[in-house]
Image (cartoon, rainbow, N blue to C red; front, side):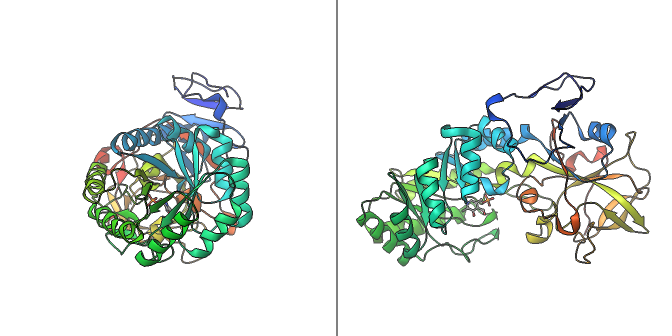
Length: 431
Ligand SMILES: Cc1ncc(COP(=O)(O)O)c(C=O)c1O
């Protein structure tokens, strides 16, 4: 790794220029091969304005803010009264995992063998990998336990319990994933996974009878707005524990902690961690090991996507990323993202705000961003629109449909942007 004094820090590329930028160097934790970089170079900038000035990118660019990820990790690990397991699926980029590690995260929810290998390869045995997907291939269970030392498995059915019991090697714990009723989350998760209370109690009894240490896990749903959802789920877990009549070593309250999006004024994380701590006491889980499994709340603010206007047709702007790419969660979860504009040479874009429709790059007519957007009247081909709060799921889900991919990832040192800072050329979606 090469760290230079310069507005632009290049890893494996030619020397670049001006101004100090300090990167935390973790030489033993280098990104894995195959990570899309900027033409093979690893770039870091102080700001998006510098990226625009340096490269004038004509493809979309994922802009990681590792410092924001690290700060979010530090914040949640200091608030949560138990182990914080990061849900790797949310954003598996190596520099995101490294930033979380620097922020104090030592436990990782890995849903596939590929994620197990990623965590092990990048962070080694100092990071614990939990195979917390309720459906796993036998070969994956065997390899995860034998070769990668995975000691924690989630099940929500008799079939999976027997599969893990027959296949895993070494001492291991079984956590039973319990379904929870819909609450105030944007995306309910128990329509796909989770045993009913009666089934969960039976699974706990069966696993305990096999001599296995057991725990209970649940997920109240992604982007949850109500801390009481966790307390209600803890109450249900207590009923399951009492029905089963076996000692429950671990209680995993899952992910679902909300991130900030436009128009979604969610309670602060403290409201969730305090309510969970209260619920733990209220429902008698003080002697169980407490875990949570967040994704979104840790990494949403750690990424933005820089897109370029390829064509203006009246009030329609055609940009080079869309709903099949990094802006997919606008459709999946109907999230509203903050945005701001950039122009070559710096300075704001001319004109008062007008209403625009934003089309993605593919030929598919559904590739249009929901709503109408307020952008400066003078916006034209070649200007850039940056969308914030896309660190969670977006780049992990993005497809290369129609040959459109975000070909580059850069690190950016500046803070995530918020609509409160509107003076700097930021614009809100207005409908
Ligand atoms: C099992 C499990 N745990 C944790 C998470 C992370 O959830 P969130 O990003 O809402 O915190 C997910 C998300 O899909 C999940 O499936």
